[in-house]
Length: 407
Image 1 (cartoon, rainbow, N blue to C red):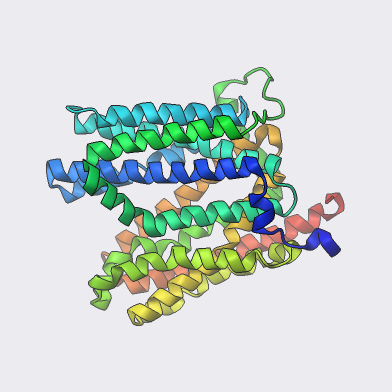
Image 2 (image 1 turned 90 degrees about the vertical axis):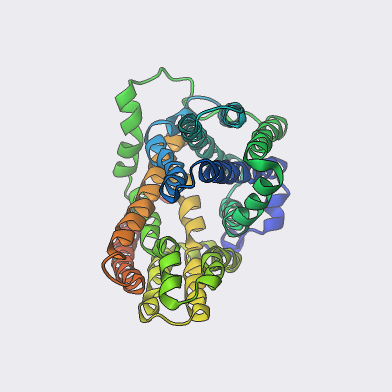
């Protein structure tokens, strides 16, 4: 690409689109609601049981639906208009969270309701991502994806502290009622600001259950570019390991009081990386996907020598900055997925992404019981570089093969 076609889109151009502003506001409320529901119930479990294992299990259970739901429920985004899916799932989450807040509900039931909240988030997220190409043309799609990514990273960096303050001020039950209100407000915003955006083929007869579940996998497997992009995205499983081992790593350094610096480094680095990467030409970003994925892990290698907290935080922040390539990966994946099956393709990506991260954290945690956390991070850094190199090779071959068909 040359000339104006290869110029990066500005954030101003994206914010100038009214439908995107409404979608972003709903995204903010959705992120706040998801985090608040997890945190409020986790604190409630701790208050009633004083059990660290049950408290941790409650928080971990809230992530399981992202994997299972991505394989089954994301297809809903291809059955109805994108707006209908998002509004309906927001209303459903409002009702379920309100039920969690009712007095006298057993803890086991509340945990099950939290799972339902997270299951409903799957088609919501698939519909939100699937509608973006309808709102944002050309490089605006990358810029818009970057804005959504920064919003999410800000939620990770600052959400838990703010969420804890809300729970402390309102009580866990009061926070859950406030959470239900965020979902109602999100549904109202979407209904008022977004057009229906019906996916192509949404009126087609329903396929059987199993073909519906496997359609996304078959779509991705048949498109080498989608498969390569999925591989690049799943490399995050390697460079997410420091977040999972942050607590024992800080203890290894004898710096428990400075844990917050380590936890905030990656999301803050990602925000900075998005701002820098967005300024590059779109064609340049695509050529950097592989190298940036490898650099996201490579820069973590010195962690194995247990540098100071400051140096470690800088390394983890750099890893986050390099991982900003994910906005390009996401936007390109969404653009290449056909509209009629985009929700299913996004469901596959979401499930694989979460599974890669979850598996890496579990395995690294088990290894950290036998060897030093710093060494575990270094081992995963090496493995991440190798995996990224393989994924980058696949992406280069797939794009070269598709070149004659490129628009």
